[in-house]
Length: 261
Image (cartoon, rainbow, N blue to C red; front, side, top):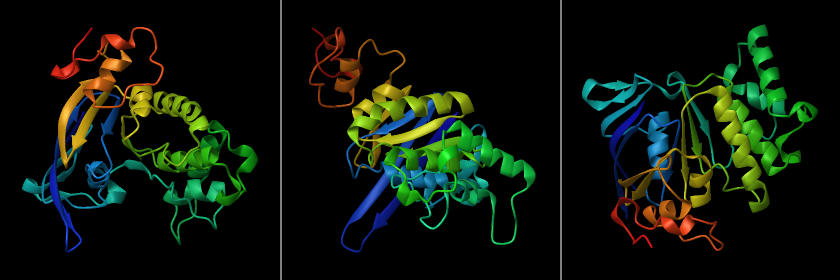
């Protein structure tokens, strides 16, 4: 179960943004969907412990990560959260192997034999063996994403958070990497929360989507129960596909919006 209900405010002195987001689900893959500036990234950062909400709670798999009422706020390093940044945030001076291992080390502690084996296993499972000694600048966008994903998983997180995981990729690569990400999640068996403003990411990966607008969750869409892709598009206020697949036109009325033919 992922259970989030948080309130926070951010300001640059001239503008102020208030986030009041709440959602709860047992779904394996959750999408926070909506336009830029809706509060999706702030929600993910609060779940990871990168920013502190003013009120509310964050609970994952029965573990309380944050609860303002009970004065609980675990440090980010203790939350067992894997985070894939939109830019991947790889260290340019470190090799692929060193980037993946970074979360298991510090300036004093060296990798144990068990941790080193885990790094090697992830390198192999992500198809990175031939480039394990390479620097990020020599890798393609898809390869960089695999390195960042392996680094997010090396510490055995209880939940995986992904910030616009395909935004930096060539459109030609996106479908292939969506399929790879789905296979990875199936293999590791942990819940995943993904933020995106691309409806195709939602359709390809999510079991449930929460539409965010103006700092709030305004609608929930259960994709496992949806009868067509077009109904999901309508429910999430997304633009229709250019070439709808057969039967997609059946679903324009999900959650009370649009008219079914």
